[in-house]
Length: 226
Image 1 (cartoon, one colour):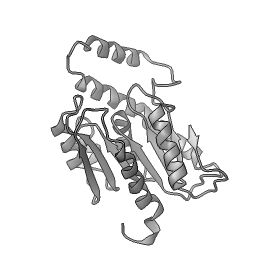
Image 2 (tube, one colour):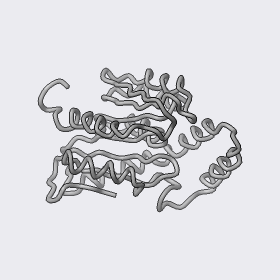
Image 3 (spheres, helix red, strand yellow):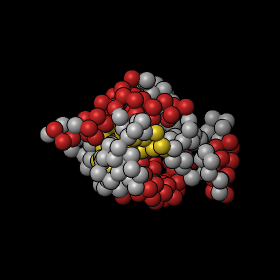
Image 4 (spheres, helix red, strand yellow):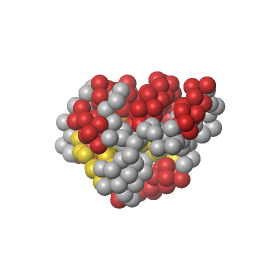
């Protein structure tokens, strides 16, 4: 999915949106975020179905994961199962995102000269962190709602500005694990946004905060230090 301002021209900032687990590129929250970035900032925004999600077919591995979640539905911890699955998804998804970015920058209304940002939390971060390592065109990112498992080494290689969301009472990601991942980022500029609440309880005002973050790094980057 691609959203862009009417009569857009090349060279504008592009924000890539990574959806969460069990969601897809047309999830209502993702669409609302995309429209907000387009209408308020003039960004182009793109979203991609992760493997096994949305319009994508499910593999046997995807089906086994779904079955494992159902088996643990009776109060058993699922965090480690989700982390392992998300790691395998990233192996498939990172090359797809890079190919999609090549195609997007070949469009007249985006072009190759504009800066690129990434927003994705939970599973979106599990894919986005290794993507940011592999893709030098991404110059700023919003991550969060995920922990250090399988991501700490990749995070240590990231030096771009990062905004990180953490839910203090997250039932899926232990607080200590999320804090450890934030600490692992090698970015000179990184900000921790910790809010009370469970995994899906990120406050609505964080949308405006991410907008200011991307405006600062994607629009105002030519005006000097930020």
